[in-house]
Image (tube, rainbow, N blue to C red):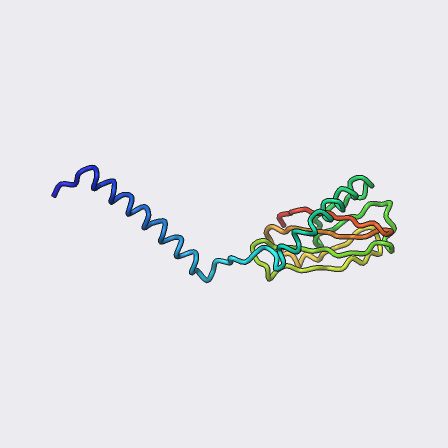
Length: 148
């Protein structure tokens, strides 16, 4: 049996559409694939985004930018030397994009100008770190992604 060009093109289109539909259906019904939003209250967080932008800008303007250092003991968050540790309040949020069960928050309590996150809490891989802190009535924010 001989197949002409028209029939071959139709067969190719049907095969391609079947291939795409197979993967669409498979991903929609796959239990391993996580289709959740990044945060539970995504729209509420989006409304507060301008405040985050202002807090990041304020930290740059005031020269109060944080530094993250990897040490053998863990991840060290270094606050500026000009900051008095007892006046710093806030939280450190560690977000793991690949597994929401590894996400955690730490309150900031400083006795010196650095905060240490123990190595045992951080698995290898990418972490998004968000440090929200207040110092003498002003709000500041530092965001950074690291690969640990």
